[in-house]
Image (cartoon, rainbow, N blue to C red; front, side, top):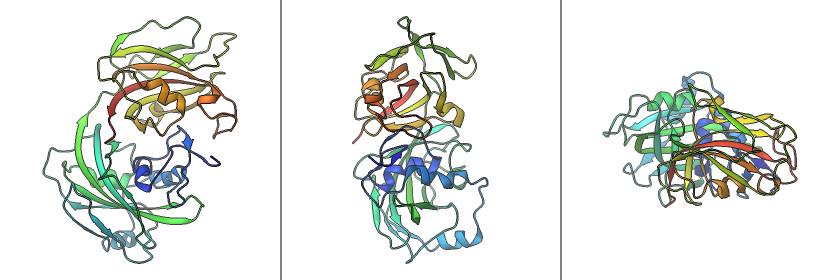
Length: 329
């Protein structure tokens, strides 16, 4: 519990989406696996401003080999003491399915190894693929450039410098198989629900749907979780074990905003078993397409520990648009 990270990581591949898109700001407890990268550190690759990689890194990645059919767990082999200075990607095998388009949700199977010695850090082939929203503005530029114009069934090899859980410099290497791609809505769609009186008032941008809130004068948050649907979607019910793709914004009870997927320009995907309890309890049972107001007491949030810009013992207010849900295998 000592290191708060944006997403609890069990293996390096459990952080594939974070590593490729940058840090997100929902916190569970950090992993006890010292070989897993810290989510807040893997985002350094995403800050690269251009899609070009150095000639030395491109040459280094060319020495990484991947054997096996797309869709099945491959063998990923790296030279001893493999490192790169920046993010770098290459197309290992071109797919033959439908063309991947901007704004689609990609389902990606992955294998990750540590560059120094090729130690396996995990894979998703025996569990469930990772979801990644494909937007050139929201994922690592090198990966976006590799995926652009490709088709479902493509295999990408990707490497980037990072830090392990002890703060040591490492390079992580991934083989990524694009298993499927689908379009999802960018905001909640359904029937408006009149909220109970006395709750923070939510106003939506008429063009984008991005929410803003007004805190009632003298507002005192409940000590219990508040779950208030604002829009009732017509999709499937979300299960507590699902991964959900959402647009969301978060505020403190004084109205201070601390996080927003809207501001980053792309939806985020989380497993409900890996985020603060208030999210898991509040979104389970809701339907895809819904928009939900959550008021999360400290006991179901970060408790008596601060997390980034969130003070200890904070009540958290979220407006969440549930865009998609995927069951764990």
